[in-house]
Length: 282
Image 1: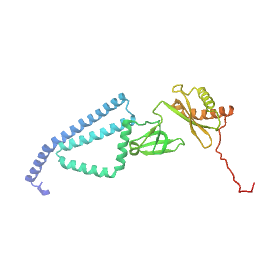
Image 2: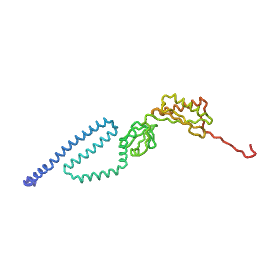
Image 3: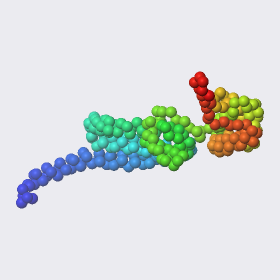
Image 4: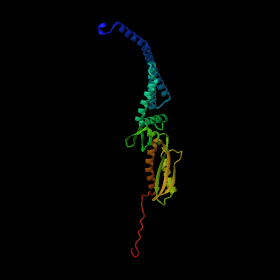
C-alpha cells in the first residue's frame, strides 16, 4: 500500500477505527431499525383500532378521518423522536428546532389554524350535518360538505357559498333541519268592517282540510294588528319540517280563494285624499 502513500501502520489504524465505529454505531443503528419497525407496526395497529371504534360508535366520517390522521401524525413524531434519542441526538437541540419551526408555521398560518380549530369543534359538537338546511353568515341553504377548514353551503338558487369554519364556530347558526316539526307562520289582511270571527272560522276550515297540518298543537288564527289598510290576522299551524314550504304556499292560496268565495275582501294599499278649496270656490 506504500505506492498509494499509506503505510501498514496507518492502514491498521484505519481498520481499528472502522471496527470501533462499527461496534459503537452498529448497535444503535440496529436498535433504531428495530424501534422503527415496531413503531410502524404499532401505529398501523392503533389506526385499525381507531377505525373499528369509530364504526361502532357511529362517529361522523369527516371527524373520524381527521382524528385518525391527527393521531397518526402525532405517533410518527413520537417515533422519530424515539429513534433520534436512540441514535444519540441531543433532545434539547431537537426540541428547540421543532419549537422554532412550530412557532414560524403557527404565525404564518394563524387564520388557517383558527379555521382548523373551528372545523374540529363543528365535527365534534355537530351543530349541523351534511344535508341540513342552515342560516349562517347572511346565507341560507343546504350544507353540501364539512371540511376541516371550510364548510360549503348551497343556496336555494344553486349558488355555492364557502364559509371558513373559524367564523362558523364562533357565530350564530340557525339549523332548520334539526327538529322534525316546524311552525308555519302566515299573515292575512282583511278589510276594515269585516267580521273577524267569520274570517277566523273560514281560515281554520281551510287548514283542517290539509292532512299535512298537525292536529296538535292545534292551528290558531289571531287578530294581531290594526294595519294602515287592513285588519291583520296572524295564522299559525304545525307540520313536518319537509312539508313547511308546500304547506305555506298552498294554504296561502287556498285561504285567499276561500275568503273571496265568502265575499271577504283582502284590501290593497290605498289612501283617502281630502281636498280643501279656498273660500268662495267649489
